Amino acid sequence: MPADASSAAPKRARILALANQKGGVGKTTTTINLGTALAATGKRVLIVDNDPQGNASTGLGIGRTDRGAGTYELLFGETTVAASVRGTSIPKLFIVTASADLSGAELELVELERREFRLRDALAHVVADYDYILIDCPPALGLLTLNALAAADSVLVPLQCEFYALEGLSQLIRTIERVKRTFNPSLEIQGVVLTMFDRRNNLSDMVAADVRGFFGEKVYETVIPRNVRVSEAPSHGKPVLLYDLKSAGAQAYIHLAGEVLKRERNRQSVHG
Image (cartoon, rainbow, N blue to C red; front, side):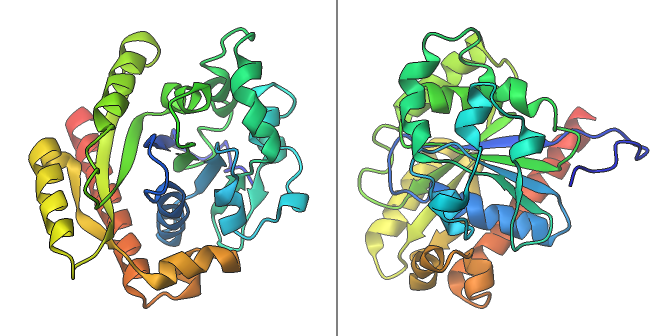
């Protein structure tokens, strides 16, 4: 599974944490479908399911009784990424699964050394094996999300187009700034992606305008529409790109992946 370590140019995966403490905004859906779209371009992608709900694992067709060692065991040093990584039905897309055990990790991590860096330490051994590592965070700003932010190069924020969209985001931004100061000086906001956009609803346009006014160029041009095929796909254990490639939702995630890759190319050109 790992890439050939002898390949000429050393590389390091870009690690993106998909985070928003508000639930139901499309974090997991975006993780799965962005990962799938990036893999479709030939990138090697690892998804780390860091949410006790385990929906990223379910959405990629891995049942709860078929998961084995995953993120929980990773955080407590009981396994390695190389030993726990699973293939998926999508070529070049891999996952470290989550189980219900992860729900106890918040309390159990408190007593451990380097409690904020457990995930970063684990991923350090495989950053040369992938092009992108996407971490699906729980809807909370506890130690699981803190581990993801400490491990990540940048944060991708899915934001639902609803009246209270910006409410609470200030808390996420403060958390990102605190992590940057204390644990991860290079952490940055990769971008904000507007999800569940309803073109029939004037409120979606108003929210989009507000978010773009607040975040400026950090907001992706691509918006993810409210789409029944996107909602149906997880129950079939598939990303929407496999469930219905021609659907508006699938096409939106393909465009989002293109934007992510473009931003990465621009970042590389700026930073050398």
